[in-house]
Length: 402
Image (cartoon, rainbow, N blue to C red; front, side):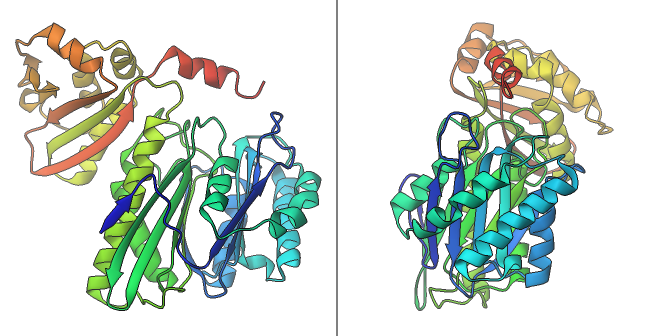
């Protein structure tokens, strides 16, 4: 297995393009296109928010109609096309139809995504006007990937890509991932846009099983601010161009590992680029009765404003962590809880344990910190990556739409 979070491995069967359609006031690139080989099959996961954007509704429907076939992905940034009613649905459908007309493909094989401000009408005429140039500028190149990755960003400070590959009997399989995400990051499938590309051949059902399994261990184990977006999408596209089929246990295992490595890298990149963050916290919860119990406790800690602001100040205030554990809804005995900051135990059996506060403070001053919680209830273990909460986060989001 070769894993390259910085270098871009380009699977066969995909080309990329991006440009500015004038959606963003800044004039930065805000419209992007992926063209896919004819036999590309797809699997997807979407937001759990009950308020969903038009492209999520259209994308879900189109995947059902096409039985998982995708020939193009059209993405705009700067406008979420959410809470825009029938007008927003019509705008999304028109973008898909015009894209399909230009590429000479079926409209239901065009998969749409949007990200940006909620409640603002999508400037569909600006988008449609740029589609011919967008389609003609498509490239199967690393430069094309970089332009696409830049064009889908909103409050992100940098693009996010990762690659992996593995050798099968008949050759090499490549996996590429491109993501955007910085705020509204909460483990509800994936609070972000993520596009995964591979040249393996696989049926939509098998791709979906692997994608759901991988996301549970990666994107569902991160959080920045606890808010769930209305546009979350994770899309896995398999072009079949390598000629290698996902039809035996060994290949499935290698493929899952490659997808996992790419998603794990993207998840870490998203958290590290969280809005206004100063510290990334690797929160380990062990000793739960099951994985979901551990996840519930991790989320309670990670979403506590008091805990997150303590981390922002590098304050080893373990009492806030214990209180968040008690507020998780898990019926545990606090007398069995132990808490560690770095290599020091700060809480033993639910009570204060003598520790060097200056050393704990010094550990929390680091950009990447370790916090471990032992519940004493079972054998499950979960690693959850989260962040602090700073005044910069407030500033970024207070000024977002103005």
